Amino acid sequence: MTFTDFNLHATLLESLDAMGFEKPTPIQEQAIPYIMQNRDLIACAQTGTGKTAAYLLPVIHNLLASPSGKHAINTLVIAPTRELALQIDQQVEGFGYYAPVTSAPVYGGGDGATWDQQKRAIVQGADILIATPGRLLAHMQMGYVDFTHVQHLVLDEADRMLDMGFSEDIMMIVKALPAKRQTLLFSATMPSKIRHLAKTILNNPHEISIAISKPAEGILQAAYLVNDSRKNELVKHLLAGKKIASTLIFASTKIKVKKLEQELRKMGLSVAGIHSDLEQPEREKVLSSFRAKQVQILVATDILSRGIDMEDIGLVINYDIPNSPEDYVHRIGRTARAESTGVAITFINESEREEFKRIEQLIGKEVNKVPLPPHLEGGTDNKPKQHHRPGGNQRRSFSRR
Ligand code: ADP
Ligand code: MG
Image (cartoon, rainbow, N blue to C red; front, side):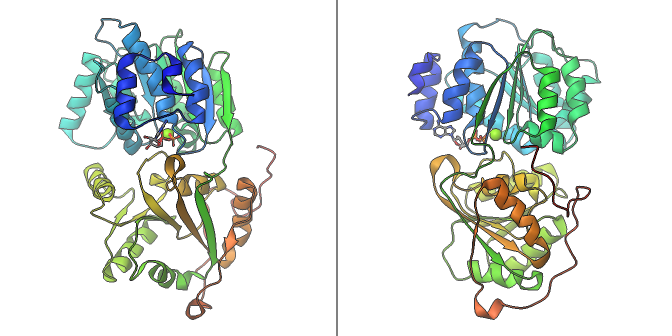
């Protein structure tokens, strides 16, 4: 199958060609025809499988094939984080390069000028508005947001948005939209709360589900059983003195991120950290220098684990195991994007061993445990990991999947 089989508008084929997209990914192959028929859709596929294009292409096609001639918001995309909103906006720019399509990202943070710029885009009616829930509601409360001409609503990374507590915000936004619209819900996992949300706001949706929560085939996964006090040395062992590809290290708290960033910098490695304490412009600066390979190692909390697309990440290190098995899939999904290959290494301390079994159960295979280099054996663990989720240390039932 090729992109020409969809009967997409000619300018889209041109930009796909320019972007080097040769053939549709499985989720694109299945989702695009349904979206073009104007049906509601729930689509579930792991990270890195091309979900963004799966909804942007048909939405932009529709704008080009039947232009409204109005300066009005045609499509509202809701996404969990500013990084993701920006990234979706960039994809619109890519696909819309040869087309008269306007888009604008609307996200929190920034200064008065950012707010004014977002307000202008809203008032002038960008064709495609890509917004985080909180900031969009703030604009809505000012009274100038006109949703009367919205035809498509997209919820991207819906599971993440619910995890972040956005479900009430989403409901408030949805209530302000025309009832007659197309609604598309994209998610990497399909927990029951997503089904519930879908029931409330989608209309007789078609459902597509592709290999739920299985990491991409191209990722080589391995793990070390290592005590906390040895983890920094193990990172050094893995990275020092080697010519390393772009590396992403995840840690569960911003304190760990800051400490590890300092440690690695002391070793003379090219490193930056990203976490929720950084202001938006700083986060963007860090991300763009990592993308541009001015920085080789990025240490991050889970704010980065979903949705953010960065090419050529050769190695992902989980400095500790994530709070939920799904997050593991999201974290390691940062490598081996779109059929390339990558390595994901996880550090497991004594108290995390049971928890890691749940991850292995979710991904349906045992991850290879690599023996520690002899000089890193022993050491001590810090106090057991605190879980955000109530009862997070106990085994949960798997009946929900
Ligand atoms: P997801 O939202 O499923 O996590 P993305 O939409 O962010 O995935 O896409 C992951 C990467 O794959 C991006 O770099 C995107 O440009 C690329 N990509 C998507 N579709 C294709 C395709 N058909 N051919 C080549 N690359 C693609
Ligand atoms: Mg995505």
